[in-house]
Image 1 (cartoon, rainbow, N blue to C red):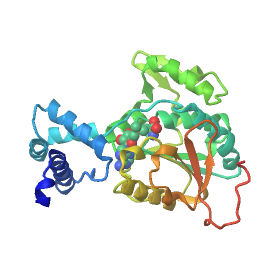
Image 2: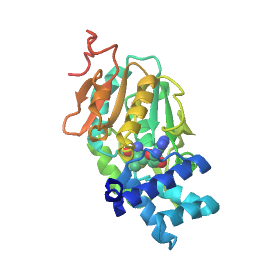
Image 3: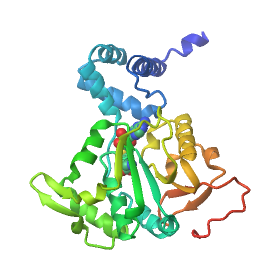
Image 4: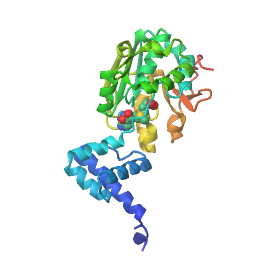
Length: 295
Ligand SMILES: C[S@@+](CC[C@H](N)C(=O)[O-])C[C@H]1O[C@@H](n2cnc3c(N)ncnc32)[C@H](O)[C@@H]1O
């Protein structure tokens, strides 16, 4: 009886989604099993309708036998929305609070995890250039999706119609020059100065399956963890913890961390006016070491 009660349409849908994600993992090597359920469910139904199918199991059958359909589903799972100086006050706070610390280092390594088409990376390169830090910085910009990385690294070309918004963001972020100094207008769009990627390495990296690859002073992972469930967030958070040097800075959206326990031993610094926090790695909770540069 109890078994029958569990046979609801919702539970059947959940089972079919589990089977689909398990199939993608076991047969194709793509691990989306711990992505946030509602978001992945929406994308799956979008693909079912686009393929003119009627069920999740029908989609499973198709992706197992049709490589093109598989790629379309994987593309649906990748949400690449981004912009330059996104959440400008984050960049303003970074400039005011993190840059003074970075000045004290002889060289700087920054990791942008989940960089999408690179707008965030170009923004950081401008900020560091204006603060006189770019020359001693190496930026590692990674994403799971090789297509967005191609756009980020080969072209550096962005749509002209975005420039008005980006210029406003840049000003709010404390930009010190004219934003247009960084680009020229071409027939294909706006081409940013190649200088901005001179110290950038773009590479494919999967936060779910790949390991740490360096030790960083700063890791930024914004608008990525929202797509993961709690256990995956914690796993990725541990990956970042391993990848940060002492006093390293981790920047996420505040709302991206659902499981607070994983950040208890971090000193938390609330950025003014923004829902963004930085987590500063330190020895342990009881450590007397203070980071005097922040408040
Ligand atoms: C919404 S974009 C965020 C881009 C940028 N960080 C920002 O805030 O504007 C999310 C990015 O995370 C990437 N992503 C999703 N899952 C990932 C994973 N497992 N490993 C690495 N990147 C991932 C997606 O491909 C996408 O480019």
